[in-house]
Length: 275
Ligand code: NAP
Image 1 (cartoon, protein in one colour):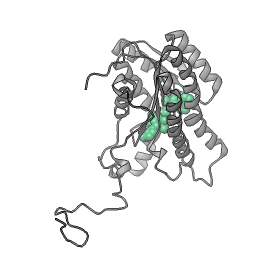
Image 2 (cartoon, helix red, strand yellow):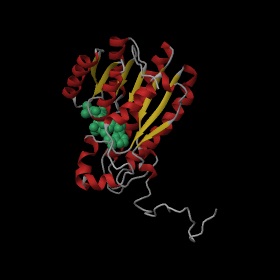
Image 3 (cartoon, protein in one colour):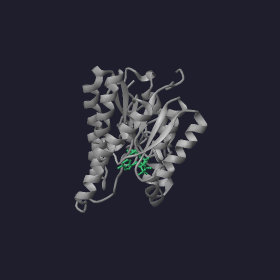
Image 4 (spheres, helix red, strand yellow):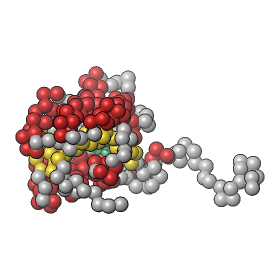
């Protein structure tokens, strides 16, 4: 495979201040893209990342405040980007949030917060980006979903529903925008080391956590960032509306519930060989 080349591309990464988003900003910049790093609460982390990226990769990097759940903030963020870059080639809808609550205790505020950040935000950003990409001849939108867009999990009713919505948003956007030369795809991580799950990993114990994952390890932000860079590049130009699950095999994992190992001699359940 040839090198991923994003030279001259202009990218916006929502929630780029830390975790997976920060990893994506770094990788896109390493491939040559200028990056707008969106932050909500973590202004200092975003500013530090921008200066590191500029020094390390020699590209332009800016930071921009926005709560992606608020339409006026999103409009201001895209106006900021217009002023700095004059357009957008790559949008990564990465900003996300969760709370962990039993469905019977979950509040309307929690539900709205998670749905607004994880689902409404990507729609708002895609609308602004899509209009600009149409005007300049095309682009790529990568939505950061989760294995929980298809795998249900206790305590995450709102999160799972929001990511399932994001999976379908990806497919519908892809269908509607393909004739404008805009590709829309999603990347769905399993367990990745970030602030979002640091507490849970230590609560259950790292070894226990790893035992749920066939590859035996928790992913790094680079595992996600590498895939995003590929999907943002022309190397993936025939990939439309697809979901890429990056989870160390977690979604294949029936080990917890079905410990039966494969047989060495290829026999059936009655111990008979069929050939
Ligand atoms: P994280 O470390 O908690 O970072 C979340 C990011 O989202 C932060 O940069 C935060 O920005 C931003 N954010 C939150 N609310 C926002 C808002 N209203 N407006 C703008 N930005 C906002 O989480 P992460 O693990 O990197 O998660 C990144 C994405 O990957 C999320 O969509 C998450 O659902 C998904 N994901 C993560 C995992 C995992 O194992 N880590 C697994 C599956 C999916 P500020 O800090 O500036 O507020």
